[in-house]
Image 1 (cartoon, rainbow, N blue to C red):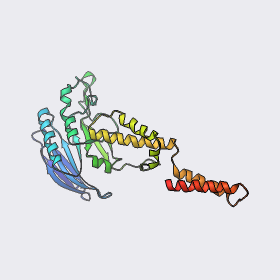
Image 2 (cartoon, rainbow, N blue to C red; image 1 turned 120 degrees about the vertical axis):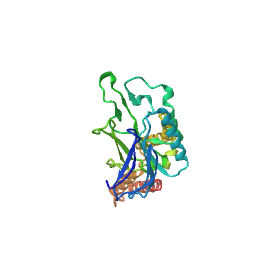
Image 3 (cartoon, rainbow, N blue to C red; image 1 turned 180 degrees about the horizontal axis):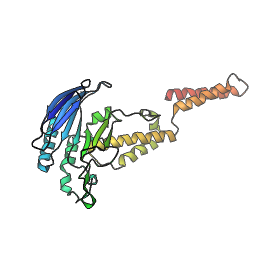
Length: 285
């Protein structure tokens, strides 16, 4: 890597480094003893966003102060952003395996911080835990301490962004690999709401069902996932209800082509009917 920004450790604790290639549009914005913020300009999309590289304290009291500082800082700034790194905390009890369970009160500060800044957790693919104490048997502890949080605006612009947990050598933490534009699956197409759906009362039931499904996370995270669920269900429902106007247009055009120039008695009426149907389909499309 050609460029870097470093925060020196205090004794053997802390320490951060951000490295990037010189041909990337990255600029240093700010740093503290627990994070480094850089600005990124995406050449492919023209999108500008802020990246905060984080290493939160292992001390509960200090970490709560860090959440407060970050929340105040984010409220003073606008634009799309991402915070990723080692948060040294959990959002949910099931993000830990081994040793004694976390007390309920100890799982409040970090989730409250996530809600306060309106963050969306990008989730992950791969092994569910990012840290382990490397012990065996009953002494083994595994936790998901590392994650990626983004603003709703960032998530909308990079709606296919994915995070992978990768095993790393020489560290007790997994590496996070972010892909903002993973390859599209074959046959992928963007979602478009079809106004014809509103004419069917069943469309309301599709929305109600998706909105009633429980989702854990901040309010913004909950809304994002329910909207995504609606998109997925509408695709299935539309296919089952045969709302595909393009396919129907092709079918009618083929029928007209099969009839061709045959104008025997009775055929003209069928042609007119097909032409009317084709006209309506074009209007719908």
